[in-house]
Each structure stands twice: as C-alpha cells, then as structure tokens.
Image 1 (cartoon, helix red, strand yellow):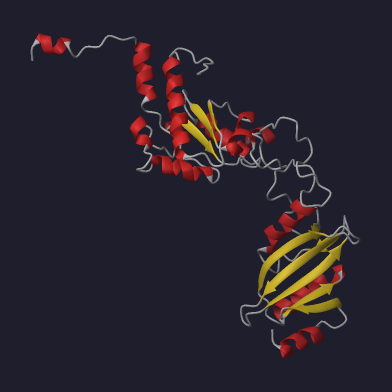
Image 2 (cartoon, one colour; image 1 turned 30 degrees about the vertical axis):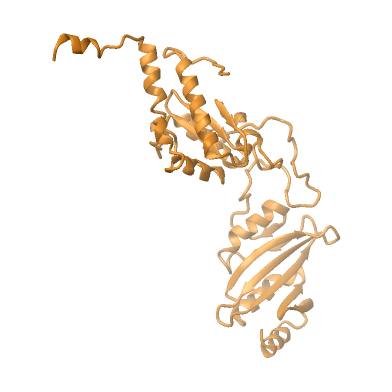
Length: 162
Length: 163
C-alpha cells in the first residue's frame, strides 16, 4: 500500500476508527460495532476493495469477548486491508452479505463456530455442523470432545428429521 | 465328444456351495472414499497389488450394483446420514469393511464432529487398523470376507465368526 493511499484512507475514515496500525506494509483498522458497515462500504466504494477474502471470528477471552475480522483485497491496486470489530457475547453485527456475496457463507461459518449473530443476514443457520448441534466449537471454553461424547451416536436420515 | 470326456467335467456340489463360490469371487466394491485411506484403496486396484486377482476389480459407482462397502476414511457426523443412506441402498447380500483407524474407532479424532467408529451407524464385517493401512491389509480383509462368504448360508445370513 502506498503512503498516499494509506493517508487518504485514514483521512476519509477520520472519526470512525477506534485505532489503526500498520504491520508489514498492510493496514489494520479497528472500528466500533455500529460503524463497521459504513466503514466497509466506504472501503468498497471509494477505495475499490472489491473482494472479501475472508471473514472470521476470534475468541479473545477478554471483554468484549469476540472479534470479527474482515480481510479485504483490492483487485485494482493489488493491496489488502484488514478491518476488526469487537463484539460481546450475544451482540449482533450488521451483515455485509448484500455487499459481498461470499459473506453469506462466511457469516454463517462465524455463527456456526462462535455464535456471533449477524443482523439482516438472509439465512443465518449452521453451515458446517448439523442443525441439532449443541454449542459453538471454536469458543475457547468448548470441550474438544463436545457434549455427550460418551453417548452412542444416533444417525438420523433426512426424512426422519422432519 | 465321448461320454468319457463329459464324465470328467462333472463336479457334484450343493447349491449353497456353488452360490457362495460365485459370490466369493465376484465381490464388487463400491467406489467410495471419505479421506486419505481411499488412496490406499486405489493402490489396491493398481498393478502392484491388483485386487482383480480376487475378482474384486469391478468397482461400481452405484450402490445398487455393489456388494462391498469399504468405509475408507474419517466419518464426520455431518456425513453419517449419507453413508447410512448409501448402505441402505445396497442390495443384499452386502458386506462392510471398516478401513483405517478413523473408520474403526474414530482414530486420532477424539472430537465433537467425528463419529467414533462406523459400527455406530452400520454393521461392520471386517476391521482393518492402521493409519493408513497398507494395500496388502486391504487384500487381507478381502480374503477374510471371502472366508466369511464361504461359511454363509443362502437362505438366511447369520452371524459368522472367522478365526
């Protein structure tokens, strides 16, 4: 990322950032939960970060407990930027699935693994685990074996579920 | 062709033995793999091991035509309904090999998302331990299945133990 591009990003988002830092010539922005959608929209529309490479959750074990991390990539300028937002357990983050189509499944994954809810998501349900799964496995307090590990596994076919 | 020649070509046997003999050398496996152990199953079909020697080279992509299900790999809880469905779609008589540590017991995956052994959802005839087992082990399991078929009755399939 060039120095001028970096400065213009910071200038455009002035007042909406909690903090920002640079590591290995890549910029990370930390924003408030209420601003995340607006900041991402500005990055997409003004600075042509047209690709959402990844969206993931993090359990940091300190309040506010979780973080949602957005990794953006600009096809035009060939650089990357990271946006982080901290959320408490039970909080809702606004969805970006209407801005980037891939965010649909990525948000479902974050919900599946951490229980972070996304407001306005069209179809927020588990994606990797079964619908009747109890708990959120990537939370730090989740036992690796899950709950009811010693109970025999009962398989249920699709028609038996309904 | 004289009558003498014909006499030498007649073998007297029971129907049961004849059917079992036929089944034994035509075990058609299902083309089906869940994880890395499936590669060992592919090697079992290759020239160096060659399971065609035992009449099992005809891997069938449809469960309707297959006799043998080789559960090769890690069975996740999400995948379990599909495996059970495929097993139920196979026509009787059918046999199952649990191939590899994961299929036998869950292996190293003592976790929330892995079924701890396929015998929790479908009946298993032969277990092959190893991570992954060598293709020779697969051939050994195939021969065990053949030994089992030899002892089966046509009218009803009952529990058979092989030494």
